[in-house]
Image (cartoon, rainbow, N blue to C red; front, side):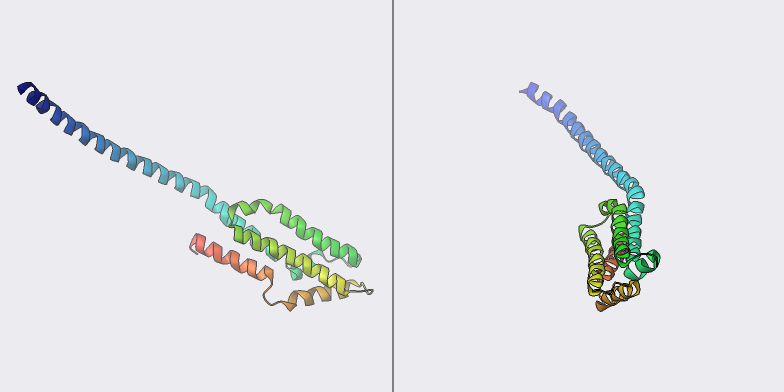
Length: 175
């Protein structure tokens, strides 16, 4: 019996020291792990946040560049036929979109869907304006119809997409 008491006397303090060291070491390592994860998040944010902001900037620029008012004046060439001009407008929109395709990685699904819808809406407006020409097919008439179609809707998909992007940037980046 005395041997058991002697073993307990030696074991209990050793066990207390072991458990104390274990929990202190465990807490220390957990804190170190949390700090390392926090440092990694900060380092990632130093790289990713500027890329995200740049993506939003590029897509707002894209929306501005495909705005019919901007597009018409940027691509105007009086030597083109209406068919060639219409095709040039649509081709320019698609090329701009394709050029910025990778930006979707940095933005929400909803933002990207609005951008796609805006692009399709502008192409639709071009087709509607073209279909209104009938047999006339003069470039000034086409441009006039294009502006009329664009103005019919005060809340175009371009405006919705641009406003959504601005709000999303403000909420993400605390502007």
